[in-house]
Image (cartoon, rainbow, N blue to C red; front, top):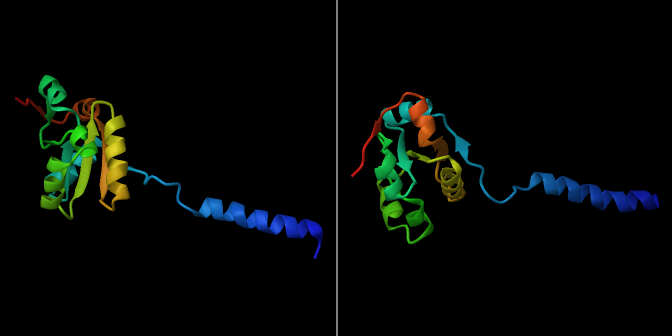
Length: 136
């Protein structure tokens, strides 16, 4: 066997393995606001606003959304655990103000084996002409 072959064979195997292994965090699916509205209306999914309650009170929330703050998700998950148990088997669609926090929540849910997707920001929901309601 050629000395070069002995050197490159293990290196080739390592490179192949590096590309075959997952990169850690689960990639979050992305769903458009109109697609999210249709999924929620069909009963196949639930929509969650992950912004803090003060933010929701100031700007409103998507009509079918449940408010479950990311701070609860990052903390003891009292609200999230009950919600996920009650909606087992449904896709969990999340949004926030810009899509950044909801992406993190969607990825964390996906890593736990929950079918989750990021819908982006409330601005995307409103821009799609979908209803927004006030929250007290």
